[in-house]
Length: 476
Image 1 (cartoon, rainbow, N blue to C red):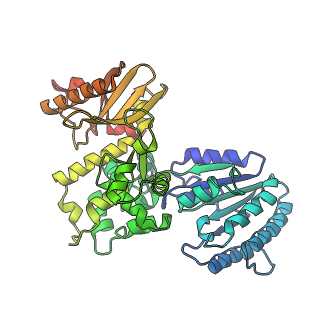
Image 2 (cartoon, one colour):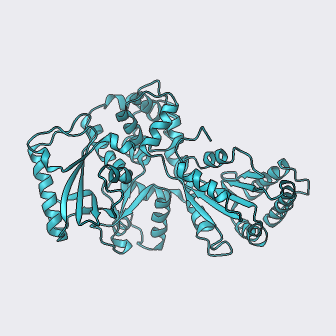
Image 3 (tube, one colour):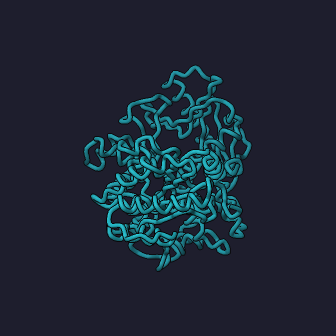
């Protein structure tokens, strides 16, 4: 457990469930490469009463063979099962014997890459359903953990199952990417001496994904790493984008189409707008696509102006940092330049992109922002807003609506040094505040909070910000 970075909440919950004194069925889900298997194997120190891993893309016969091999590894000596019902009966026989030996101690079973076992017309889910309901759920010492990269399958077939497994999951754990602080700890463990601005930039490109972060060579600069991972001749992450979506979704091209459309609209689109741009029906199928992408932490759904609206009016925004970077700089690049990222260093194109990515970092670290503003103990609602009437299309990325009759309007500014407010930017901020107050007809007091990387230069315009949040504040 001493090798684990972060995941304090998840580890605590697993420990709590282990002490419940009743049968547990825990479903762990999250996007590919986020560390699901590592979390489980670390929590149980690789000591299971039975564990098995599905074969990605395997046929029914191969999946059955994988399970049979695992059964034999744990001491099963019966004949080879040919159907999933027979497989689970064999597993039951094996575990009953082990339970007698363990005399009431927890019997821990781990199914990794669970969705792989459910090949077409295999009957796997029905067999698992029968195994749990007819026997496992009645064993107070039984502890089953399942996970898999195909998050949409886990959610639909296990967590939200409407058949025999309906309501049978005792706990679900959504494993999310690292925060900035966890990313920094992860890199420090690799002997990194990078400054926080480099950690931030790495986060804006790779997200808080442990597998991607593990590929960084901290003896090199971040720029050298990005050239090597994305733009060199044998770039390790050049093909990861397609693999990522193919591992998560059946008909992955449909999901990638949605991601592509959202990547071209930095502030997001409504479901109706997505349907129109893709020339597809605005129906339940699109709802499922969007919900799957939300469950995998690729996109977020938010309401405008804090008013609960029908799902058609909600805004969907791309939040996956890796996809955001790949689609803007890697996809479709015909001429391969192994030093591309180095060559555009500090150019307007790169700095503008960093600015947009920093807004997403802030949206991913709302709890940290609330803490530095001393609002973590105040009931708040966070949302975004865009004007329906103003000619310049005034928009505010983060609004913190407080129960104490105040509203914080957050302006996000990325800079490689202290940010200096200009007269024109000051006028734009005033206009946004006034337009927001008029259009929403709010009676609450409105404060401006400026979220920057290194703080602000005090000048005659800086007093518009009642609060300033900097990069260090988000490493809580």
